[in-house]
Length: 550
Image (tube, rainbow, N blue to C red):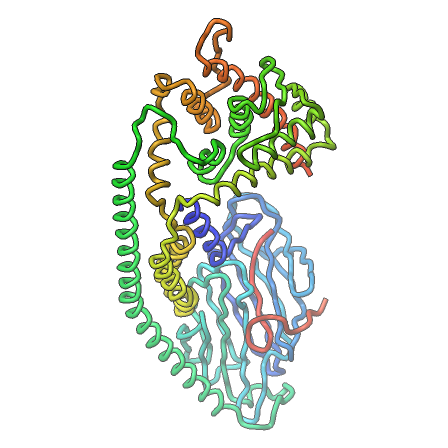
């Protein structure tokens, strides 16, 4: 269940945490944007960007997306008065200035044609210098709007990151001191002056606009206030909501621990003595599947083959040669293993270990080798699924599923109100409940008893005092579970020992070596196989932009 929890947790994080990789390491320490409104409705813009680079770099980038009713022309860049090369790719401008590990300040100049919209009573500059497509953070951003001549500011406000950042001067300048602006953020600004200041500009509409601008500002403030109130509500709600979920999680954990304790106690009471291998209907490979978290390593294949030798289906001719005696097996996966080894690989009743390696070395057999291995493993899993070793635990799993379903909407709701800490807690709880709902199937008494009986075999050699038949089974179990480091075993000659398990240990070394080499061959093969067009931004009027480096 631990693997399920971690898998679900990592998958959930990938869904909710964006991943970005930057080719150049840099910080935009300071950005000053000065927009000088002209009487003809155009806007001359000067941007000063200070970058701190911690790597080699070729230059900086600036994305300028004009509104659909405007255009951007005359883009140029300088450093200390010296002009820098600028390359345009649609709305992206690359300013070439290479270097390494230094701080550079670059001035960018351009003109917004049709930047000011003129109405009967006012002229407004309503503009997005950046939008949520921006992939870089501005550490300290300031935007200054200057009228054609000193004048009264009739309206000035910002949206999103620019909200409540404006100040006005006596001569009519509006300064938006945004400070740090994170990537992926909008920040439109809106400034209005008397229409007479833009006498040379084309009129957008002969309708009055000031009242609508002021009403929009009031509506914006009301929206912000309502959002703040809603955020406060959900912030308080989250405390009680997560407390309740933590209580449910605690109850589920306590239930699972108590259930496990009761099952372990009853299993120990029923457990047979430790002087023999478990007497179960379950095959040896299925036992290994059970105690190895549903996995069957190559070593399990070695144990399965030698278990057929123990049963008499296969006769040992030598450490390198085996003969098929009969095909009457106890389990379908044993029949499948015989067909694979003797019909597919050996193509006779005699199997030489070198046949396995030679078969796997052939490139044409690589895929067939893997398919046959998977087919044998699947047969073992089919057998294991026939045994009742776990409880369904419907009630606690339904409770966990309901809790996960309840938590899911809030993973989306909390970040909407910038409650990212509560979102993180919701993700953790959702992961726990979903994992519990999917993976909680505790061992019943029979399953726990089998596991308790097999556990000592992973760390102990007490089985050497058992009956010969049980000794062999215990050894093969250890071989299959990789508790025997076969590469370091040097068994005594077979003729010098009366212990049958010594013979099987020697065979294990030879068989395991062949299967490992064959698997290596098969797995290697499997693994190689000009004037910018307006619109398209997320800011007002389809405009926007952002900054970066390359």
